[in-house]
Length: 382
Image: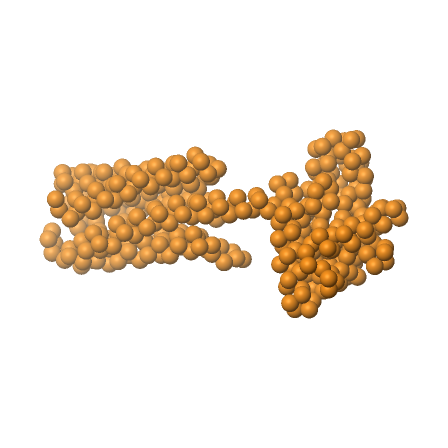
């Protein structure tokens, strides 16, 4: 069996395995759109490598042409899936038009007026540029790569370099059997490894995304999308340690909506849910990046304000208190929301969140007792 036959068989088998793996990932891991797109990419690749093998063994130009179109389609679907995962727009015409031009150029290359050099250069060059652009669109904004993202990014860069190397090697082909040594070496020794690596990295990325989603679900409240009590406790442990290490102040605010039970009883749980989501959004927008917002249970929320003393924290919450009174629920405009706040500053003896919560709760209780819709600082309430 020739080296070309072995390589084609290997790439065909890898495509089948990856198409099945992606389909299972799509079915079991949330049915995300980009995973389905990658499934389609590897599904097209199965037929593409089969057509490629048919063209090679049967010396059939039509099958080679179909293989070229399949490769263009598969690469385009891979790129579209990456953009879908990144939440970027997917303008189909920007993929379809260049792919159509490359397909026409490939048809010319396999026609009598074409050449083997053109055949070996056009598609790898297109795929190389497309994969390089895809790697760039994978780049996360405002954060660092996760390990699976970094692995996928690196293998995409290697894939792009390999394809461009193939295109460059094709330019050395001068005849049916002349100048093909480098092209065949890259195709046989480099591309199967990179192709398999791309598939494995894609599966790892899907698994990594799932793990990250599960971690987020464990630590976040599904209704308001802020930390739940577990997430708040973990964030507080880090915040207290950091404040103690650097000798900086740390304030905890415990707050809730006044008359929340009456709101639920009078307008139903839909109104209550809307109130909680609106209140949580006000809290998020009021604090700085790095501060922590969490739902402690029911309508009670906790905020950790870093490098902030109790007086400054009360000033921030005063703005929130005013804004709560202007919060309009979409379906219940007459709800009339109000909120109360208790503030406690970290002291030397505080080792965990619960130590601060006790004092902030006492301040919140004093605010409720004093008429609600107000802010109390623990040392003033004690």
